[in-house]
Length: 504
Image 1 (cartoon, rainbow, N blue to C red):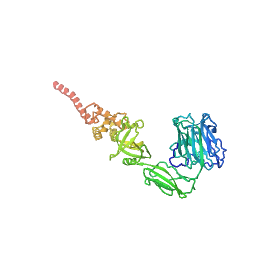
Image 2 (spheres, helix red, strand yellow):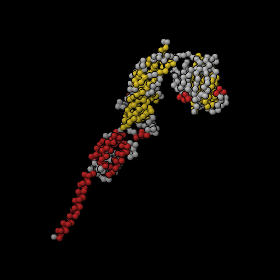
Image 3 (cartoon, rainbow, N blue to C red):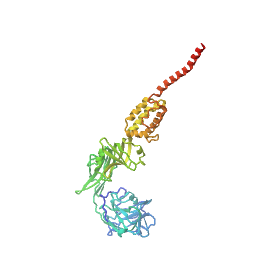
Image 4 (cartoon, helix red, strand yellow):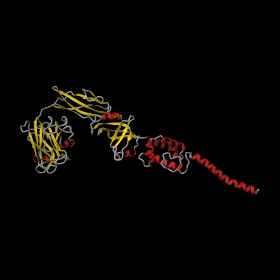
């Protein structure tokens, strides 16, 4: 079984000590520190079995000085006759094996893995290769099949009846290897490592760059192997409109949102060697620009950078659905994916016509371009703005217990021009609405209509205490009081006049 690496092997950043064969390796994991390299060897293969590692019954740190000159270390256990590795870890490191010193002048050529019959079917062992020494098996914790140092995997399937597999896709610079289970316990009868002559091939590995913001600047760097450290590097950008770079110094500047591939190249004896990294730049985009950028994205792929877009809600998440759609004034629509009510509870109060400002990565799902992993920066709608304005108008009058009809009529006039969706929402809103402005106005609205008998312009079905229409309460109270006073005076004066006339 053969699996090929994706790209060239990189210098491994987790190595704490770059070992030369013949050096002494010291680590908290490795108890044996008296190993000396044996120089050139004729036997260039090592057969690793449980016996080599002392057959520990529990997952423990182990070491083995091989006759090839390689030095192996790991965390494993045995079932008396087989090596047991896993994809987990303990305080000693990851459950796997690494070679922390390579034979003098040798590199890995191939490995032959023989599975024990008690391995569960479809269990896989991952192999990794690199040019620098491993520090200890903790280095395995960050490695998986997506790592650049991943060489391949061998899988045991009981149905095939085959237990031995050969992996021979190692790189010329793979002087050190590591292996562990991809998932669950794996039992190995043996692992045979074959070494071959190492040819010092020049290589360059460009250091990765974190996500940038527009305007960020910096200088690219790279690791060189088997070449003079002063060897000049020529830099280039796949899209200088996104990230510009100085070809000789590596100084860069992020100019626009998107992603650019930065490449570093060295030339040795007329042969070019290069390495590239993707550099993402976050920024603000229009819906139309996002749709255009998403055309080139493969289905299921997600950009490494994020964009911030703004639009008007034109589709809400329905029960059992998953899409919220925003649009611009030209009708370009963009799906905001995964706005579920359990993670975005405010979604239940959103209305068509809301303006949303959202940041997220661009992805494509079944040819639909979306913004995924969204962060809602802001949201506003005309209903909230109207409610806030109405509350501001009512603040002083409610405090003085004298809401005038002119104020009420102005609020009603502004309500009448709102979109039908907003008016319908306010009609059924409650004092526990998630939007505080709307909740506050609902409480005031119902109280004012009931107390003053003002018009129920939202048709909430509130009954007034009197049919006073749009007459100011104070302008009505004064004439009523005067009339009542006149009646009272007449009631007292008329009988007195009649009595006097009788007496006369």
